[in-house]
Image 1 (cartoon, rainbow, N blue to C red):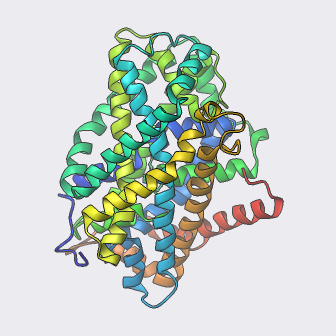
Image 2: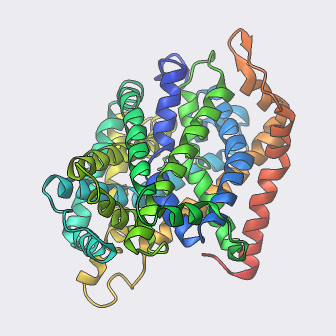
Image 3: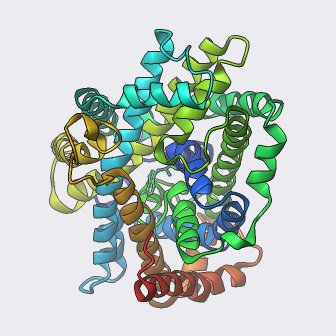
Length: 459
Ligand code: TRP
């Protein structure tokens, strides 16, 4: 599996863009973005998030894709190929571990989308008319320990099945059709939400920054969200770039993925916040936010039941194209570096990951069913979300930038980024990208981490 000839490959530029966008677009945009923005005070969070996407996300996207396409290896193998016998491959190792633990909480929320899909098919969402009634549905839907675990398990099985089948045909074919449908549906929903009673209020909340909300945890969470949403900081884009042919315009492909992803996040904010204000829910509701708010807006629409079903089906699929990329990184490592078969690796890692997902699955309501205090009274899902989805990704992104900017070297990086077979795709402002990679990204992450350690203001 080590050379480009024997590994899978995307069919071309468009196939890659859609598959990578499939990895990037997922629960991060529709579940995590509104919930983080709500906890981070709205407009200010969104502003910092957008700055981070441009100043850190896009350069790191370029860096990961170049590393992948140049080496045609998994994250650990990529570093080994460029700098053998150094400690740098450990950065890839951190990525593999991070991917595993993100999958362990992500699959729980992905399981909820299946629960909502079943409910929307059986009319179980019909009574969600305001914040209170909808919260009750959410609590009962995810509140049974058995159900929470079963939904997670079903989702893990789906993920394992696709990854076991290999990358190119399955993932690519699915995303090509479904991503455009999801986009159109989100547009329709945003149109409905903005014309609701609280529409304007929600719009203002999303785009008007309140600088009193500024704090280091909010900055950290916006940085984590930018990386999480773009699938960066752990080598997923190294892996996806490794299946790319040498002829593709890498920076254009990377920039398109970042653009689509950001569009979808903003669009889902334009759905959630207007709807939220119209039903009187709280922006700080946490991980349940989207699940509480969305059914109320479906119920206010003509053909709402069908739209709800379609929406949760697409959301589950969007989540699946993301979980696939998370599992794929870990599997690619065991296949390339440890000589496991793809089938062996997919089943074994999926199984172990499911075991690690159980505490998170039980920590959102089901814990009460286990009795007082439950699992030490810890919200494992939020904790893992913060540790792996904010801190580990930020650390990973910083190390990738340091490697690409200083060890591999900005010159080689820009060359790899602009290379296209016999052609050369000159990147406008490539020297700015080099400065961002070498100085701005690592420094921004470092300062944030140091400040947090010194002040102890972790979350
Ligand atoms: N980006 C995906 C989302 O927004 C989640 C995801 C998939 C991810 N692969 C990743 C996050 C790799 C971080 C790293 O839903």
